[in-house]
Amino acid sequence: MKMRKLGAHGPEISAVGYGAMSFTNFYGPATDAQSVEILDAARALGVTHIDTSNAYGLGGSETRIGNYLAANPGARDAFHIATKAGISKDADGNRCFDNRPEHFEAELDKSLKRLGVEQVDLYYCHRRDPNIPIEEVCGTLDALRQKGKTAAIGFSEIAPSSLRRAAAVAHVDAVQSEYSLQSRAVELGLIQTCAELGTMLVAFSPVGRGLLTDTPPDAAKVAELPFLASTPRFQAPNLAANLAATEKFRALAAEMGEPTAALAIAWILAQGDHVIAIPGTRFTAHFRDVARGGEIDLTPDDLTRIEDILPVGWCHGDRYSDVQWVGPERYC
Image (cartoon, rainbow, N blue to C red; front, side):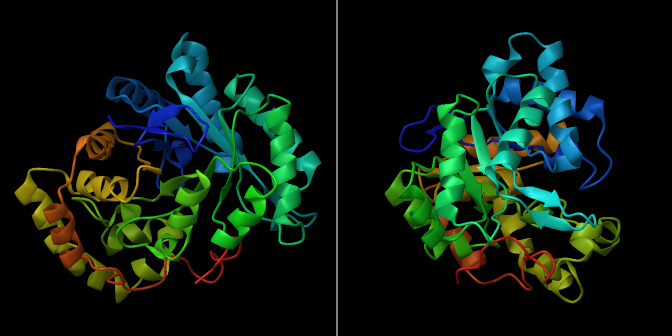
């Protein structure tokens, strides 16, 4: 497994991490047994970075990680654990964003309790509250770092300009954003700004929510998953067009003797030494496929062949619906 430094000042972590939203029912029923199998496999495969959130299963993902750590003495030292806060509910129960200092600290205290640890390794602002300047938010996160409740700080789904504003207050160790062969907006400034500022880019959904795998979701599977069913690129006629467009990529992976998901991960890691990927899955066989991506070294010819098959802009449909776009910062 390749290892990469977390930003300019951080420790080395695995180039392929694990997106622990899959410890919840977001992409289908998840069980305690599956989470144990995944975390066991992570230790065996050298996957050290585990990326979760207080919002995943209303703390359920963190609880499953915490239960594993409690049942496996010494496992804490094997993992670099990140979590997030900033998504909340208003008085009427509607989704909103809360970036107040008291929210971040109270939620981090709850996360620490669920995880059973005294400090997390990375704490993100999950979504920005547009009513609070990002400079203030970065100061809030940095204060939690100074208190020792987190070793590093980051943001999720922010624009390059926002990252620069935050970094003027305190070093930002990581920015998380969707990045894959089918979602490449980060190349319009974010990946470059991260490199310049010594910030790690953490790529979530690196296999395109399943489209860049050997078993992509068909219309029947999409219909079972509310999030995918409401996402434009998984709706007709976009889904059929995207499945057809990715067939040549699957054929290339087969020709190279690699799982399609591994090739998709390897492509992401080839975009910069400051980039890691955090695929999520409930199944150990698929987890081994994505982890394999952290061992592949692609040649310039390999990268050219991949780009020829899936050039920038090939994907049909937006990555989010209008409702899903509430929160992430658009910058292009």
